[in-house]
Image 1 (cartoon, rainbow, N blue to C red):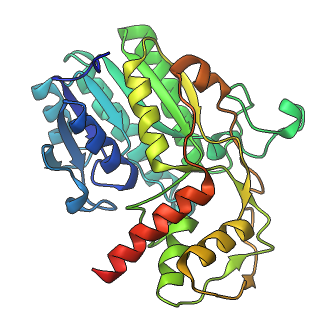
Image 2 (image 1 turned 135 degrees about the vertical axis):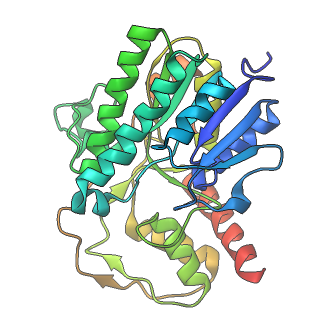
Length: 320
């Protein structure tokens, strides 16, 4: 069956970044006319695929709104965001300005100019908070789990989901909010507050020390970027709107993560623990059964395989 947006204009915001560039790659391969908007505050120009048109713009700008109005994009894949949780705590106004007002700038421009579907990069752990023992026995968190964001970042993602519902109900735009687990894989940024996988992989390959925060028993649902891209495509291809978890249903703690990466890099590093991060969430794990039923999506890459692929990518980059 042909991809419904093949031959149509699709806008990928944050398309020079880690996840967004992989999404843009796939949409180009699907035959879409892909445009990428990114301000390069976190993305890299080289990540933008050949065959995509690049626009260096801030999503909050008048120029970004004008671009949406001019090109009449059929679909929007929105991945541009202020994604640093600690920065959101330190400066919640800036966080809301980018994540809420920037998103609204695009939606307002698109609603009267041909926008048919929005696929939105949301978050699982940062929206749900700690697993509720009264829901699913404290196991993997379904989309019906209470939403208790512990940071302004999580709050802005939840607010954006509410706006999506409004634009669907009021203007008939189909929407899909994809609540990610902890996404990892090639092109992940190992600088600043980034994914622990990228940080560990780069440091161990360079023979640099790695410190695990606290006891290392905090768990996350690590989902490979290729599986996330497949979820985006499935959401765009499906009829209707909704909220969908994109995870594996498997908890992996930081100690186990370190051991996998230590093995794949061949670093032979000692497991060193430092002070715990105050207020850090202890557990996050997503139930993807609703996504499987509605979108036909299941994760295909387990943690061991995904980490090996990721380490191989970082190793090749270090040799370049």
